[in-house]
Image (cartoon, rainbow, N blue to C red):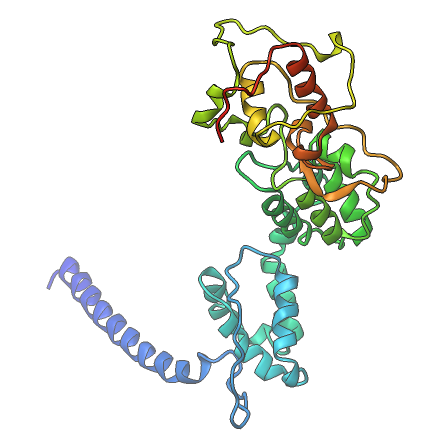
Length: 329
């Protein structure tokens, strides 16, 4: 047999021996894995133990907050480190659960070891947590109600560490509001965040971005017949109530001012007014539960009790621009 043939024969024998060793090693590993698969194989499961309902950790939130939640739900076994380690897997899912399965038992002897390893693994979530500058940069979305925005802002604020005190939270939130709401609420002296949200919701159900409120864009078919002898003009002329002497006596009209306002705006006879500055001391007639569309939703009165609108309507009537003779209820 030549040298080449001997080398080839030895190679085949070596390959066969290697395969047998691998099989034997695999069997030995399987025998050991029955025991080693458990991170804490000597754990004693308490009699009639019922596992609490956990919110599964996915690896995308603050690990410290999640640890606090887990320990509080397992407070009965706070001194049983093996049980705490063993059942920690039941509050994990996805990548976080795979991380747990790959832990080295030699490095996890107590729950403190597991806690430190867990925080270190997901520390980046703490580093990426929002801060005060992120809160100050937030603003309400166009399709978002005041309440929805407040809830979204508060949820982000709850993630800031160290925790923001209630007084500072109300100040930060106030600075993110539009100029209208800021001016109306800056002197409200709200005691906490919830009270500030309640004030904002009473002012208006939605933050006003400026201009005519959306409700004023709704027109009714019968409004066209309210004005006598005034054909539609392609280029309407703006009526200026300041050119006429103010009046304090208002003639009754056969229609609600809320129904009349859209027609006045459409014909450009009146314009929505800026909200008046909020007084330091509210007068006795001030109604925080009412708001006026003629003053951009300002609180204190409603449109039926708005003297500015009533005065403008009276002057339009006295100037023979507005008449209700043809109006039919």
